[in-house]
Length: 267
Image (cartoon, rainbow, N blue to C red; front, side, top):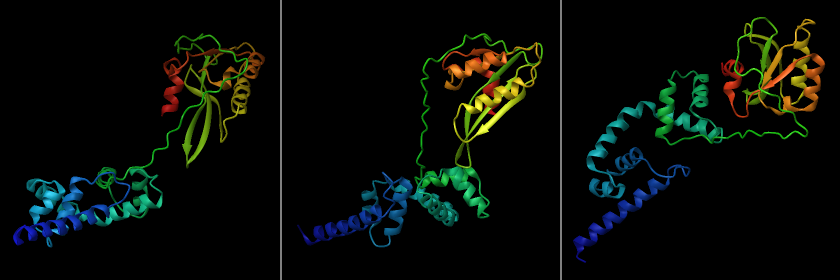
């Protein structure tokens, strides 16, 4: 090789070495470097190395580089915000999505749109670790599944004629809260409800006895629910018979059969 070829090879190797150092210095959680980050690396190194070589190493077209360079200039106003977002994200062990990050920023007095936080986090490749919850269905010994007496006929001519109930959970202040209401289909009134921090049968037992106190001697309403284990227990069936309530259950996995209660819980 001639001296000219050797100089070109050394120049390229030096540029490649510096480029790879910058590339590897990014957050190890990132699986690949974005086009914007490549342009930022090239911009930082172009004072020491030829631009053509850097673009070749980054696999960037010259037009793409200048386009991304304009984006960098525009996004400079968010430099301090992005640094704070990165600190909050790491402080909470990558569990915060853009909504919680937004809340943390606003708690510090920063006025910023949720769309801006989402865009900046996507630009920085910051994604929260999603903890998926899996519904567990309990098998009850000698369980009883009642017939669907209601058949989606949600119209009631008088109070305490048809009632619907459900057992659901909410995430409140990072803790699970279990909510059990009973609704009268005559006017949509919640005639009984219970909240608890544990998923126990006692919650259903309490609302049944509370609702029964509002019944007259000649009233025997239909109580409609899904096929949850709380309602299929023999103990639950005994309480219903004792209180004079007729149990009705929806088809398995069909939320439309209990639409009034599902709509109430949704809001």
